[in-house]
Length: 576
Image 1 (cartoon, rainbow, N blue to C red):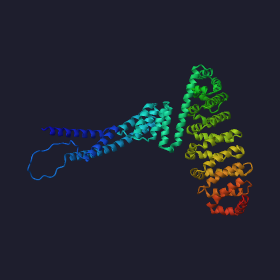
Image 2 (image 1 turned 180 degrees about the vertical axis):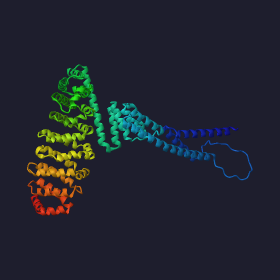
Image 3 (image 1 turned 180 degrees about the horizontal axis):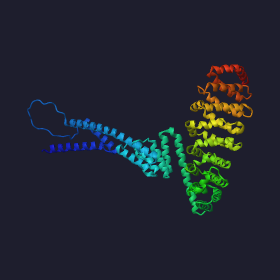
Image 4 (image 1 turned 90 degrees about the vertical axis):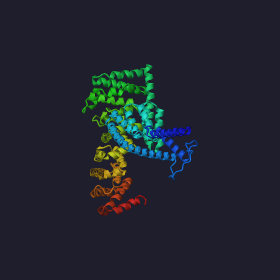
């Protein structure tokens, strides 16, 4: 074989090997390798279409052959190109089919993993997500879900690796940045955690509220970390108050002592909580666990009818919690998030012992002083029970009733509470109806007005209006309270004013609870047009403007009652 023929053969074999290698690389599990192979393929195709290589195969036949005419034959390079493109097309179809099949399997494994995650079986969830990734390596939700499961198990490094892979699949994956921020926070990489959360805001500015909360958590945890280091330094240096705090907690950890032993020790410990160092040492030396998990103390809290000693223990613990949570948001977080103390707070607020209710209210008011504290209350306490306990303070004649309504007002201004209210209104409505059924003669009037104002603000939202106006019991309770206020218009003027604002919003909904209800409301408002109070007159007229148009019977009744003369008089007095 001539040298040039041997050279052409070797070049052809080399091309075959390179094409085979490219096809294998395009089927690679590594996305980087696949991408590189696609680029190389495109380059080869462009090169082929641009013309032959300068040193293309030089095989020639240097002979003259006489033969019949032959059909024109395709160039060898053209044949190779067509075969290569056909191979690529076939391979692409096969890969697309396999991907569809693997997608179905991966989705099924994702759902199986999600179910395990909800059960708290994080190990099984990880196995399912991992199997899914074997089917489809670029499915980002499997990486983010597995990262979340790793975080639950405290394996933050592996969570970060999965987040990196999710971002390779989608560089704008906000869930990946969220889990990265959480993992870095747990690893105390505070600055990196902030960067992750800020990246979420760059990608989606609409998540500003959530990002603000995440960044706030980073700040609080970093602050707590600094506090703990300083507290430990104080303890290591032998500072008297620090050592005493640690020793007192060790003493209180003794089991099976009499209740007064614990009450006395807790009172002394409370006196020690003067600054941040002692409050932090309480936390770092398992103070919450020592108090909350003590069987004797727990029995004092759970006893329905408390004797004097049990009451003393409860009060001492409540005062201690106030002391350790003062200006210490990490302690507040731990107190509310503990499964044995968080659910306890609403029940203590509803205690039959006035002193316990008062101290429980003081603790919640302390928590609600900061945005973070309000968020803790709304996010982790039983809000139905809390609402029931707060409105029960309406029976108090002193400032505690106003304090309770002040707390409810602060919570009601929070977006998360408003969202909860709207979704929980069927369960909340009986509590609100109970407020309307109260006798203002034996209720704190100013606190009742605050509560009615809160209800009026919530009734301004259309969904709440529909549910409130559809409740016959709620509507009847409104009429009942109006009748009670009519008995002494001067004394209950503020109550009537707040109530009319609520009723006016209810009348925005059509149809009303019933025509009978609308008729009764109209009658009461017609009588109120005789009032000398401008505020009452204005709101009564506002209600009538909405009820009169709903029924001819109501219009006829209003005409018989002289509504025209009354409205003319009202307009004249208003300066029209």
